[in-house]
Image 1 (cartoon, one colour):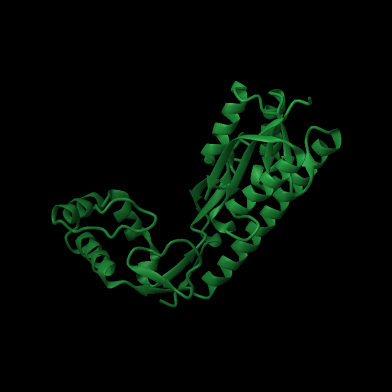
Image 2 (tube, helix red, strand yellow):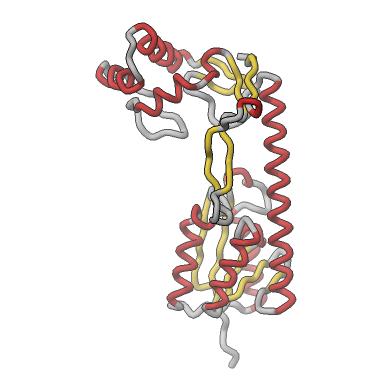
Length: 274
């Protein structure tokens, strides 16, 4: 009797890719169907929901890799829907694939029909991961170009609305409940000569509560929050673009960090529609 091969399932969906064919349920359904046809036994499932393709931001992926190292389930494969679900760039793909193969585990991408246990399959994984990385870079470039154009037109160009505003068709509209606190922050800073720390302490001492947004957790005011309010040109009717930029971390492939743009010629600052 042939030995039944075992496998882990890995599924991932990022917040910007909630579309048919990429949903977690769709990925799992197709993978399970493939495993059944191949006679592969699924002995573990790992799923990252709303995570980017970077390995250090995918806790379930990293847990799967650590589990593979222990060989506790004696798996032969990791099954994924598409190669793009496995990793975001060619370097991460090859690094993690090599780590898996060092532990006797190969990768199968069912949508593309890739199986790294074959020489041809491993070559195709290498080529397709590089192509996928290029496509993501192109999408990022196009997205940034679109945001830049919106900024030039005085429209809000992406991200959460600043405190005191809500986004309405690419334009910022005032939310009075929050806006009155923003005005008070400027009043304390200008007329009472309080620094950011002093302003934050006053707001908290007076029992003023910060409205908790989707990108926050607490209803108290911090020094950093007050500094961000005072430093944001949106509160003087401007739309800014390019005040911060993402740069690569030297010597660490695939890692980036956000820094302030020091060259003012790269910053767009125009009157906003708001």
